[in-house]
Image 1: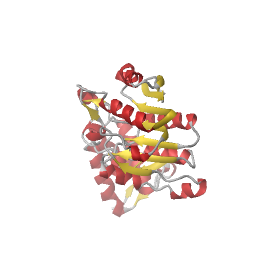
Image 2: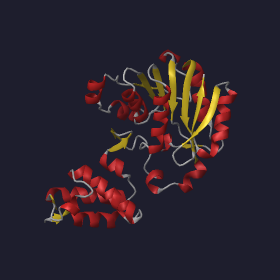
Image 3: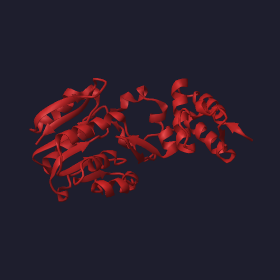
Image 4: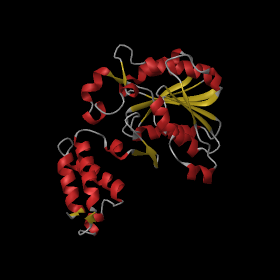
Length: 287
């Protein structure tokens, strides 16, 4: 059976609209079809007679059904974009968020070389971005999850590394809530996007996040929502060089409290940085 691209777009939008607003559903369908067929969001307009290969239709409809059930389109595709690069993702890692790109930008603007450690690295999007944006920089990513580390280490930027001279990050298994791994050496920069969403905030989250992204990387108890920041602070004390720079992504509702964690540990120049939506998004500090 022959089906035109414009018809599969309409069909997919209707299917995915069972869970998402129609405009968002259509955008997801276009993104997926670009991935699956190599089309653009304008192909069906420029070429209304464009036909979808018959063997692909069943796979495409199955993908639409997955999205309608709440599976994020990034997991359906197995990839997500961050800082202009394509990263592999799986349900073992959080989908990289645009806000986190600002964390990378702060580091790039603050330092040009040296050694960087990325705690709770997940997909490795921060570690890889910093390594690629600052060729010659040694970057170490740390995570407790074997599956996350497998995803992070499996990212392939070999062509860019070959042309730029960037070094591949190293990835290490360690529990950030445990004792700092001093054998890793000293670092000029510490970055981290740790779990910070409180359990009580689950009710505000959408099904595609709540039911499909890893809770280990998302949630903390309401009784101790700053648990990871105290731990990151201990790693910073142990591993940051004097004059070293740290940056952590935070829960916007807890900016003053998060600042106080690092002030109480006697870090200098502690301050909050807002994101593009003017929300408190990062706390920075110096050793």
